[in-house]
Length: 115
Image 1 (cartoon, helix red, strand yellow):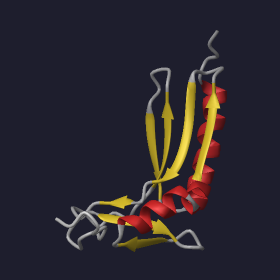
Image 2 (cartoon, rainbow, N blue to C red):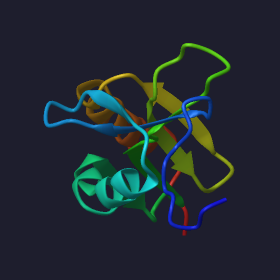
Image 3 (cartoon, rainbow, N blue to C red):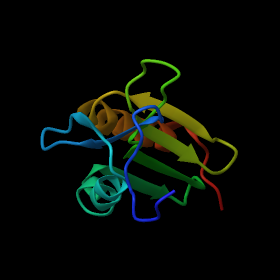
Image 4 (cartoon, one colour):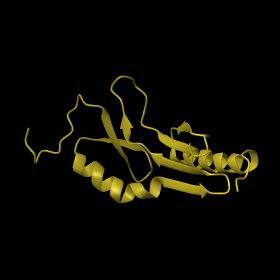
């Protein structure tokens, strides 16, 4: 294997970035994906730390889709902490932002305060 070859073979799992309209675009070069994830991709991340409930809510674009099914790459919203670990999927950035907002609101409304 050539250590300077960053290409992603067609028969590997699918790797994506988002275009300017936040639509998934498959890429075949790890450098393209890495550069996007470290720059533009950061604008597709949300994080709310809720120490009063002992949880953190994070939303981000996964950029990965398996060849095992036709499922598109997803935005993931994760709740972590306090034994309330959960994960939700959204297909679009708009839906992911809404899901994130609703999850944060529900955590504040439903989970008990700690300390």
